[in-house]
Amino acid sequence: MKYKFKYFEEPLKYARFSDEPCDNCGSTNLCLNGTYFDSSEDDIESICLECLVKGEIKVELPSFLVERLHDQIKLKYQHISSYEIQEKVNRILEELSKTPPVPWLQFNDWPVCCGDFMRYIGEWGKEEFNFNSHDGNGKEYLFKLLDVSFQNQIEDFEQFWNEIGEYSIVFVFECMECEKRIAIVQSY
Image (cartoon, rainbow, N blue to C red; front, side, top):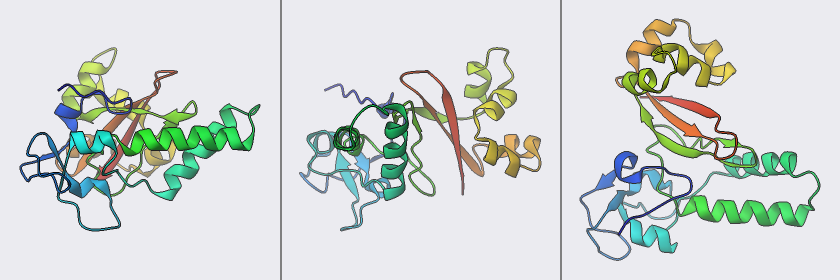
């Protein structure tokens, strides 16, 4: 069965899978590593894609992501009521909670753009940045995708570039409306 997710472009390539059977149904088919579900309940070891899609087990979303989404929707749709904003937020959160989790190193930092969560397009290394840049200069392309506040924290960009894949992981997202890309960096 082919799974398609609005917020995760290639889950079979970029999600983290487990050999353990699903904690919910016992299936051993396409089970996700439960570490990334951020569940406050029992420790989840493994959840199959089928149980995730059905919503039997969901990815827990931190409150700051809910606020981030709410603020973006309120900003984009200034003409709709508070009730309509909350309905839109609830629908989007429901869908993201049934999306395979990004294999975050530190915390769930899913970005928002144009009133919606962005689509996760992958964990990129130097090769992917070079390939996706218009001129083959992946280093410059990565710098443009970083938030300004993060750019300002980097003392030596050459060293940072060389540490990608060893000490830092770069998760890349794309807005489904304006196609803006954002890179989120997390370190070990």
